[in-house]
Each structure stands twice: as C-alpha cells, then as structure tokens.
Length: 181
Image (tube, rainbow, N blue to C red; front, side, top):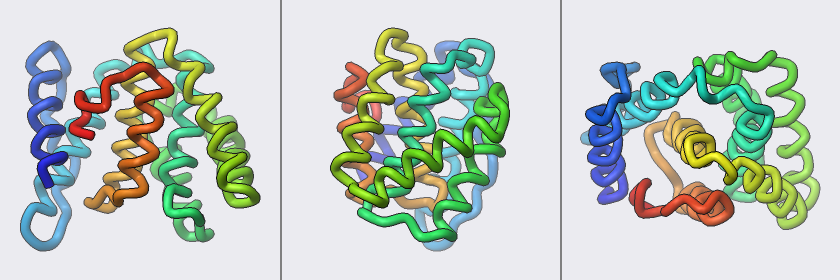
C-alpha cells in the first residue's frame, strides 16, 4: 500500500510542476482505498495527457505497446478476455490516440504472442523495445506511466506487474523510486 501513497505524492508533485488536469477520471472501486487507487491512475493519465504533444515518436509507441504486453503477461499468461481488455485500454488512451489503432493493436499483439509462446524470450524482446525509449527522459517516464495506468486499471497492481515495471525502469534508466517501486 505504501507504493500507492508514494505514487500519489509523486503524481501530485508532477501536477504542481505544470501538469494539468484534475485526475478525477473515474473513482470506481469497492472496499476501502479503491477510489484512491482509481484517482491515482486518473492522475497518471492526466500527466500523460498533458504530455500528449511530446509523445508522438515511434519509439514511444513501440515501447508503450511492449510495456502494455509485459504488464498483461506479467503473471505468465494472457487469457483472451485480458488481451481484449488491455487492447481496449490502449485504443481508448488519450495519448495513444496519436497513433492509428491498428498499429497499436498489431504491436501489442505481436508482443503478447511472443510472451505467450516463450515468456523469457518474449520478455527479452519486449525489454529491447522498451529500452529504445531511454534516449528521451520524458518518453522513458511516459512508458512507465503507461504501464502503471494499464496495470492499475483494475485498481490493483500485482507483485508480478510491479516486478516488470521495475525492470522496465532499469531498461529506461528511470529511477524506480520515482514510482514508489
């Protein structure tokens, strides 16, 4: 739970440094703390939206799709319903609308297929793709934020998802502490 608190603080700090948006993109959640997790994901979405004009490169697109596939497959498998759910999150994401939906789907599904066929090989391929975004710090952080938004869409970030997010931070030369990892 401390990770969520750290992320909230980090998200608020980024917003006060010029990120716009309220972060109230849906506060669905049951039980205690569900709403605050949804609010956090909303804040991360708002931060990404404020960077939309900067996030138009192929490197960001490809790294984000690899990140989404890794998060989806973090537990070692991706069932068809999960694949479809993440695909819909991708094509509905405001920032990712900079790119044609078919490009996004094709890249996401390529990585999911590789991860499903051979997780370790697929993971190595995805990490190589993610690392290509490391040249631009704004894009590198945005790739990790995109991963968090997808991972946290259900109001919970599983330990396996945290692990792949940490590994992506390493590949991108981004401090995992920035994201409470």
